[in-house]
Length: 344
Image (cartoon, helix red, strand yellow):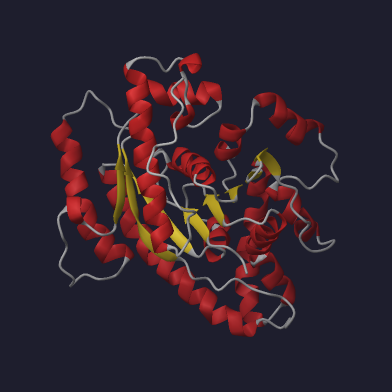
């Protein structure tokens, strides 16, 4: 049985989405789960967060062309018309934490996904193989690594790559920033997700290959996360508070399509999974060290008050991970009461 596939998606960029996926992947690993982090963003920012430049050069530039260890190399046989998907070769970050490596060449798959979408209605087997390619790659990756959960990072657009990636997903978490652009993005995102789900459900019965397993296209939104990574401190706090207070109604109306339901205040909105503040210098420190913020040590430069902030970040992400797990029926190993941080 395929573990839950959770996509993190917003058609607006710059909200801190990749950092969110990166930290949650590490948090679930810390909590004892087997995790696959999948980079389906053609910009491959999640891959760059996990791997240093030397390793990226080995994979993207020096690697043998027959070594299918990026997401693009997994789907390339379909694009070339010479076969089906190739078995994913995951990058092991730790025992229990693996990465499906992103690839800038993935953008070359966009046109094929777009052209094959209508062909599903004509019962063409190849069309179903192309559209379901991401789900089948993710399922194989999860099976090969005995994963408990798959976290998927997506690019900020409403194109064919993201349509196929979301069809492959069971659940959707929406990262937001407190600004007008995120709220306007929600108004596009909600109807688009519903339309894609309905169109895929229309196509599934037309699959002519009985032995070809397809994703269900569940695509269930489970909540939003407000990230203040991009907050400009030269602008008044009130400006951001205004946008934050509007999020519950827009999310309820446009994403959940429940316009008549009473919307609670932001602090008790059941759809809000977390409000994560800007971690300022800790984020830069973590990026330089190629580790999550909550793994920073004094040797990384996290000294004095920074270590208290590291504790706070751990608590924030642990709480968020537990909320997402509860809404996706993801069992977590029993948690110890301590924060399990080594401050020495």
